[in-house]
Length: 84
Image 1 (cartoon, rainbow, N blue to C red):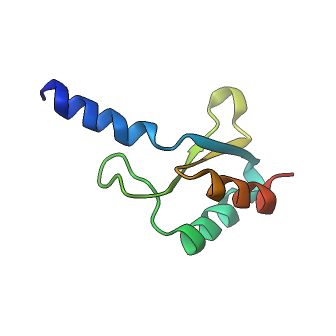
Image 2 (cartoon, one colour):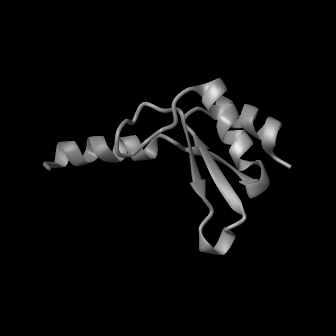
């Protein structure tokens, strides 16, 4: 992979700049809502076209999920709907 290809790949990873953390109890419903309202989920392996993604909070925050959005407006609407 040359440097131009690496930069292009990193750009796909950097576009989900806006994030909202929610409780694990809401995660499944929030994912369903995102699919209905925002379309396909961002996927690092297959496609880089999605506008949103969801990630587990990890070992230190196992009860939280991080929803990341490409557009600030999507993050705001999501936060108004799902944030406690």
